[in-house]
Amino acid sequence: MNRTVTSSEDEQLQESAEGDDEGDEEIKTEETEDKTPDSDANLRVTLPYKPKGEMFGVAESFQGGSRLQVICEDGVRRMGRIPGKLRRRMWVRENDLLIVVPWSFQDSKADVKFRYTPTQTANLKRRGKIPDMLDIY
Image (cartoon, rainbow, N blue to C red; front, side, top):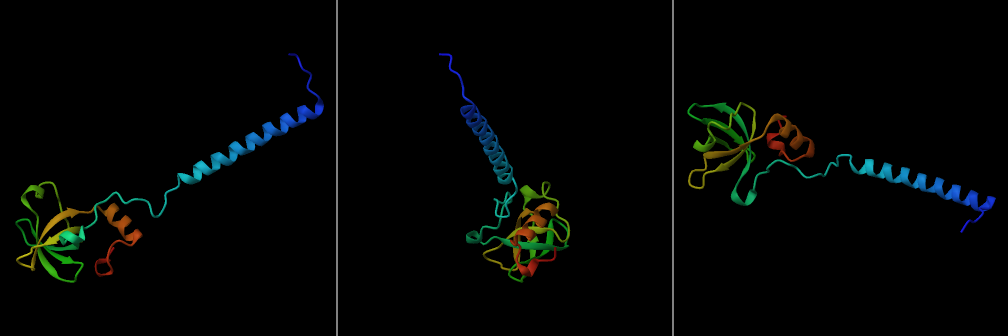
């Protein structure tokens, strides 16, 4: 079983070992390229669900009693209401981006469903999800 390795076989083994190392380096660079964030990556924020009538809105001014004026993406100014289960959880400030649902029986009023943080708003703007009507950011 002892076999002598000739010089040409030794050179071939070294070249194949060097070739394997180069292949590993190529694989490593491909892996790091895959980890870069893609501009079309999944958004991890909720978007308005259009079939239910949800739309973007911007909090304009407060009226008191968990009510506020909201400018909606369809251009209509509505009286927004924060529902009871969200009153203590959702702290809305002026110029916050919101998801609102207009009332089916009174179009001048709407319920506030969700408030975006400033970071989420910046991400939505960068990805072009906010309509031009509300693009004050």
